Length: 289
Image 1: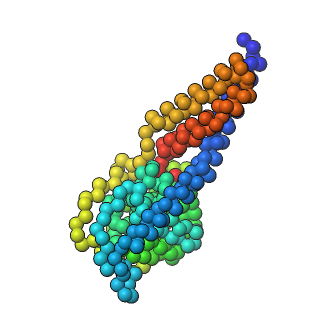
Image 2: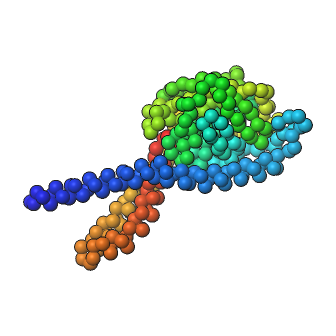
Image 3: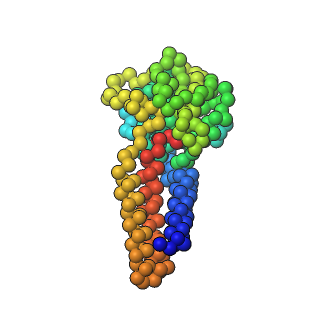
């Protein structure tokens, strides 16, 4: 056995793995933000249409006279959240699953909508998909958080922050006071803990719609904790295998034909499959990393 060939092969393998890890990190930090920005644009347009369709407000009041009784589907826009201190202006979607939080901060199903009595809860990414809650740790007591829904515009003021484990679901339980609870991962680039920001409603609450709404499934807090719902690893394995097969085929063709032309032809296909592979690997991470 030629030791030099073995060392050379190991070195090339490690370099390839290093490049893949670097590309995945780049995808997580920047590539995911591109998709999030596109989704945010569409969601804000969707919410603008909802506002236009809402009943007119009572003179001197910010709230519509009689909001329609609707239950949003997961991933649909339900409002806007503005946090002036950290420059956040994002659409909010219903749901905290992986696909929901890829698009926007997500409202925990089963908790009140912002502006309604009780504990309204919203989760958001801290390092990926636009990182809407990246600087949540910079908020101090008294800082304003404004949330707009079809029921009106509501101002909250930060009361306190906390650090809890991902399984600590008590922060989402109903409360007698009217609050907004924001959750995200802590520290940055880690899913070891959850950063919790609690804000109090400054002003009157908005009663839930008077007519009975269809039942909304309770959030899977006991099973998913504060991490949302991730996807299965099957698609990631399949796309990873396909990427490996494309590169192996390019190597085999290069051995019998010309090395660099074979790689040049295979590279565009490999990168497309690699992008989809990264997207599926990202779904395996906690939903609000």
